[in-house]
Length: 344
Image (cartoon, rainbow, N blue to C red; front, side, top):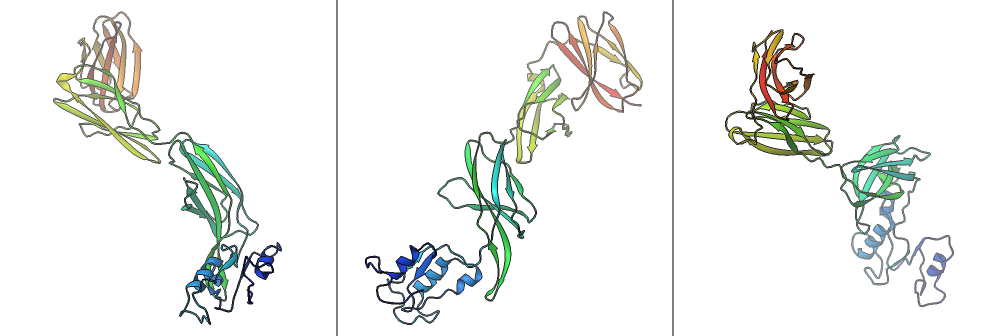
């Protein structure tokens, strides 16, 4: 701080304040005394700009002296300077993933209390705090990012400072980096009918980016496999599929009407006894090629080629009590199915 006539004038060749800034060892300079400058805020971690505003706007909070709130009160130098500075993280690197960015950095020699992770999309906008990690952590993965977007990141460490003015959490400077995300990880639910006859339908999930699935069927069951077989009930059958991943969920639905299916031509066959406990006989239609046994959740349990015989014995002694679906595939591409109940 300097006080004297014309010390701060840019149009005066011997301005001491301006010459000090050009020396290479001074970062800021102010003309003090008319009025008085007040730097108390810097004792609590605020930058020099905070003291500049307090001095320029002061006429009653502090003792101002003469010429308070006058136009000559100016700061020469860097307004972001702080009294308490410490070394933060360094060597910030980033790797892209599907809808994610994996960040790593080098820890400072003196570990802080932790690290704050900031992010922004537009280069002209301020960074926003998105998360924090503990003091011995040097990695972070930001998930669920949008596609075709560039993201910029800033990592700063923080610690508790105790000064004669009080205590405050102090932030370091930090490195920045940017990355372009091509593909997102948004989950999309969808499913399609693989096969259907007059009262039986086989559905296959075609969901994208799903970690888990949950079907909601008209009978109240909620299987979680990617493929299901379902016996349709009279009227409309609303079937929903919920696809889930770590970024959220999505639901799709379709309605199947028992009387309005694009049904395959039905070839009748019979199974007996039904219910059964240890074995069941299947009277096959002509042109039968394969016999398949499914759980109601769509899991394929047996897939058996059929020979010329029109009567087939199926061993079910190792299956648990439940309802199953027997499907017969014909050589001409047609198929037919019936429900089998196993009761031990």
